[in-house]
Amino acid sequence: MRRVEVTVGRQRFTQVGLAERWYQRLRGYMFRRVPAPYGGIIITPSNGVHMLFVAFPLQVLLFDRERKLIHQKQCRHFYSTAWHPKAALVLELPLTDATPLSFTLGDKLSWQ
Image 1 (tube, rainbow, N blue to C red):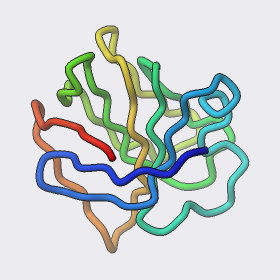
Image 2 (image 1 turned 180 degrees about the vertical axis):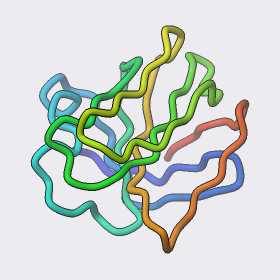
Image 3 (image 1 turned 135 degrees about the vertical axis):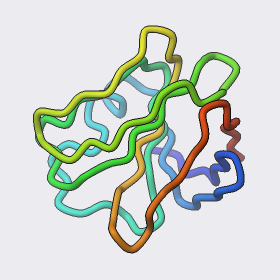
Image 4 (image 1 turned 90 degrees about the horizontal axis):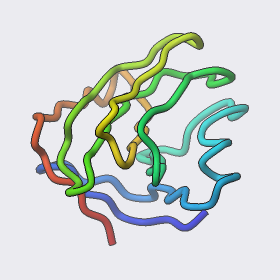
């Protein structure tokens, strides 16, 4: 999985994985015990995610085709889901008490 630097609004994240292939999108964070520090995963194309077999909480951000934030959800349990019918890509960020994450609907996503 290719690593990119991601900016959402005013927040920057390094070492974010870009899941573009079907098997990368399928796996996501499943079966991992801990996430990479300051990491995350962009899943594209995708309009939602599930938390089955994910061992830690996630902040899930859903973006439309113009890469504007249209929905966000904190997923803390294995039975959680996050989706939106107009979403085109998803950013999964590990959620910890040490790094509270705050985003505003309409924030733009970019990566390099």
